[in-house]
Image 1: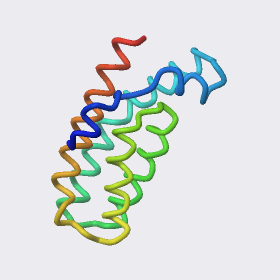
Image 2: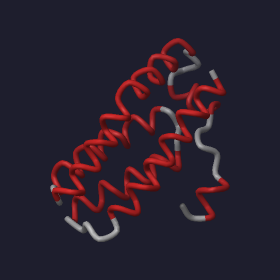
Image 3: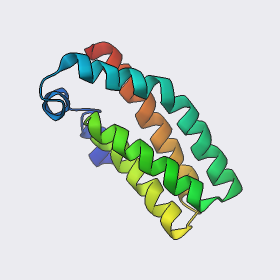
Length: 117
């Protein structure tokens, strides 16, 4: 994780609520969907990197990027975008390090969402 991301909040609650027009129940549904899906998505990313499957890496990263955008989780979304780009270019050399960053970001986001809600 670089210094820029370490100083950036894990997610922006005001922006997240603005995305759902202030609907806290809808935001909580998004949080629940994230919590239900992210462990399997991490596993799918790890598997895609291990198999050097660029299509799977791009697809799973793209899905995560959308979810993280809806949660206003900037640093994790940035890591997902980087993985998506690596999948698009089939560049697997940096992928393990970016995966570790993504995993750390998602776990930090889960903790932050628990503390917030």
